Image 1 (cartoon, rainbow, N blue to C red):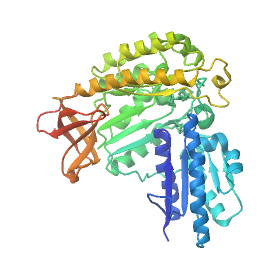
Image 2 (cartoon, helix red, strand yellow; image 1 turned 120 degrees about the vertical axis):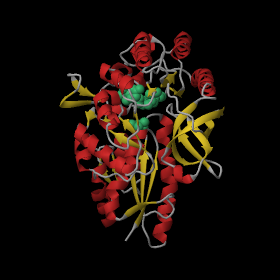
Image 3 (cartoon, rainbow, N blue to C red; image 1 turned 90 degrees about the vertical axis):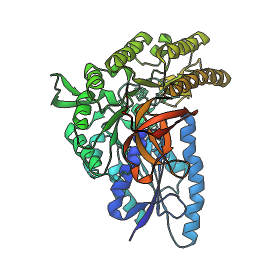
Image 4 (cartoon, rainbow, N blue to C red; image 1 turned 60 degrees about the vertical axis):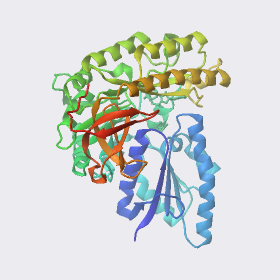
Length: 453
Ligand code: SAH
Ligand code: SF4
Ligand code: F3S
């Protein structure tokens, strides 16, 4: 008998990957994914704890689901409610206290326990909590084949973080840094290729800290992300590789060499800097200076001319002055971004920065965020405008907004829409860019040879 599973996902790409894996682990129990919670037998909320607003979303969603659950019960049915992800890890017991109608709460390293937890919930007996933080056991226990669909897929190769930036919850919600063995990654990547995947994004909270114990790099040193990229790029059918998120401290020679030498590795890198002030960077415990960051960007650009840069920024970290913020704007002007994410600092209970006294007023944070986003979007528009007239290889991923239209991604992660027949989904085609829109590009199919910088 098939049962309906609805998974709602918030947060980063790692949560998107985890949601696919949770569906995989539940498939043998007869669960298939549906698009709404309304008539689901099992609802999983995969949550994010990174900023205050992200966490709040869980409790408002739970209120709505409680009504659905009650209504189903009144009709003689049932709905199992599970909370997963980083809020589950951070606030597990509190969730069961505030929302006793929740059946299961499980942290990011416990997803292999989901079938057992669901079975317990079906038998009844109150909410259960699983918040162990050992990543290794999970990866060993998850099914080999993934049910991912579409030509582009995520693959988590590294989890957790030992860096302890003073603003960040990730070391507490995801646990210690852990790298999956290269053979496991290779097996999973081959499985994706067999399912028709052409692009893989290697994921990790600190993906460029990836290291394989005991394995030797071709260069002789430790086996790092650059070696992993070469290995996965060798798989038949895998034509594009990306990785995210990387830390500026871990940009090693092996990874730079991969950018220079591996054509499958796309010319786009997400390298969050957070702030352009050395004083603020030190208070954040980022352990690099603005000069170090700019050096890393310079080395990337030397390795792969034309590489596009993306980043993350936090404005209003405790003690950030106007002068510090001006330094951030200066850094943006100097580094030049194709695209970026920026956030107001959000104090997270339990992190060192939460207890700092010189918190920045919200109105000041808002004004700084606005100024930063104005500059970043100006840079993004200029980057997109520069694509007009160029021909680029585009991986067609799905239907566009209008009939007869498909959308895909340029090597630089820009969304591109064009007229093409639906059966071409999954192809990499040469597209002449004809127009730059605020958040995407419009193009048309061309026979001209593609030019990737
Ligand atoms: N490991 C990555 C970041 C992962 S979290 C790195 O070190 O760069 C994703 C982004 O969320 C961060 O880059 C940061 O910009 C933002 N972020 C994390 N904690 C935050 C907080 N407390 N307030 C506001 N933004 C935050
Ligand atoms: Fe968070 Fe810093 Fe680790 Fe990134 S490096 S996940 S910001 S603690
Ligand atoms: Fe959020 Fe956890 Fe990812 S806090 S950003 S879902 S690692």
